[in-house]
Image (tube, rainbow, N blue to C red; front, side, top):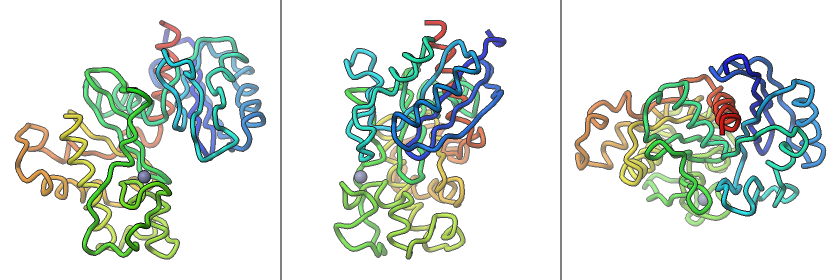
Length: 297
Ligand code: ZN
């Protein structure tokens, strides 16, 4: 199995990362293709894989998308703001062209799978993977299974209590749907809106700014811990990677919970709430695992 060449497709809203690799998580080749129109983009993706002779492909797609295999829209992109991609059959476009088994899940679920299979969550059965970048998304592993539910968790949009020092006008955030959701307050667009177009990285040295973001993240983490009872929470994405907010959010989260939960995990927050461990490869490696599973199914 380790010798079988597998395909991995991280299908994002701005780029498609295609890779080949093996069941042990090793990446052989990779390429990034800009996400433009579905026809042009997926033609390039399929052509790249066609040349490689992969035995199966694992796809981690941007959402919202149908990930429940019993759903008749399984593998389709749903009501995305990127209107050209709305109702596009992502899975069908790859599987139809390549004729090999394909696994399909959300981008954040495959990143979670990557960490569970190859990274810092190996052997765990209950894990939350959070990405904080241009948006916020959560992949959830519960009882050893990636959670799909009626669509998939959209935990990036949970509502938060605004900080007294918040400078975004009431009713405004970086999320077009919610005035005070996690994504609206801590993802790239909210950060740019609050701080004169600046990025998270540019604000990383500003202690007050980081305290504000960490407070929001801490609120969200407390909610995830209460709802999902994870054994570990892993955080990736540009905002988390380029600022100290993960470390700062540990104390904020503990403050929120106020001693309510007494678990070994809560006693060791440095190993409970962590940055991603695979240096940005968690998504691609998770796709390889998804491909391996598709081949074995
Ligand atoms: Zn929102």
